[in-house]
Length: 474
Ligand code: ADP
Image (tube, rainbow, N blue to C red; front, top):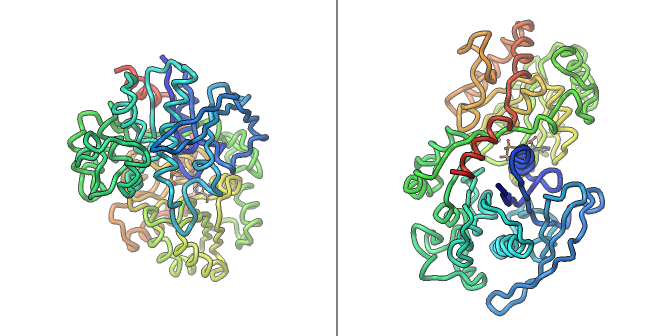
């Protein structure tokens, strides 16, 4: 069996969030069983030299509505299954999708071209795949083109990583991309309140749809989490499955992680403390007593991640015998608030930006990782945290609900992730969860035992990738 895995971002080449991690680790795991080609845009920001990315010399032009677009296919010498697609409109931007001020205005054309380019590459390279696995709105149009324009026989599998991003654009893109009005501009397909919706076309035209946790699969069929697509998802529920994401146990491994101050494993768990001490020093946080717990937040500054709750909690957190580190960036309004708070409290360190190496130091050095998400399709941070012996504190939503169970509800032999969970998403219950964390931290023996058990939990792709194989071959 051969599959083509299409993603707008893949770690380590370009990453804006969890999609890149999954687009790296899922194909990596599937490759133990089947042949998997991956393809992504060759953005300007990708370091071609570092990753040994070279042209395949396969170039082609494609005409749409009287305009010619040029494409070139690249690959990396490190992995012959990893392909990159270059087109100047798609790739010559400073970032992937936009700036903190908003999305790029030509994203419909950019990812429309990506979708055409991927199908043309597949055909011209004669890849011989039986499944095309597309991800999120950026590659969703592939389903529509494959069925309506190319009349392909390959099975199309769409994974929804986050329903909040749908790729909604003005319908004039129909002309630019030569999409047939009478077949496609329909309420159950591409049309969306007199605009077009890329993700919606993927939902209609795919043969199978997966999303990244069983709870999220249920949630997105309700008005509260459905982002106006709940009815369409309900209509297509016969082809919808929730499969939890895993993380790469190779890429996230405290035993081998070069970013850490000191590598560690369960048997030398005490070395996690070295990571905490060094991190506190680096961040300039109080460490006269390393007995203070360190709470961390890592993520995009967007309302989804519960940023309002986090901000509201800071004025109370400042009086606690505890430290906090926040690493993230995102929407400008939040960047601004965090900038204004940066040097206000001496037990709270705020780092604005995207920093892979610092994030790993935090996963290793923190005691608790906070995820006050309003919704969370799967969430990877809680799994990474557990792998590094850090206890997650999570809102009971989406994949967080499926992967983290409250310590007071389970016994010692429980073999899934354990942390602190809370149901009501408001600042009272979030602070209540932090208070619970402080009290558990007081019982250091119990706390450490849970953290060590969490390091043994299997959140790898080993078993989960098989669920995808079943879908490819069903
Ligand atoms: P999402 O895809 O919604 O952003 P996920 O939990 O699925 O959230 O994945 C987030 C991934 O991005 C994790 O690997 C996390 O460590 C990483 N990440 C998020 N923000 C930052 C940041 N500011 N610096 C470094 N890594 C980050």
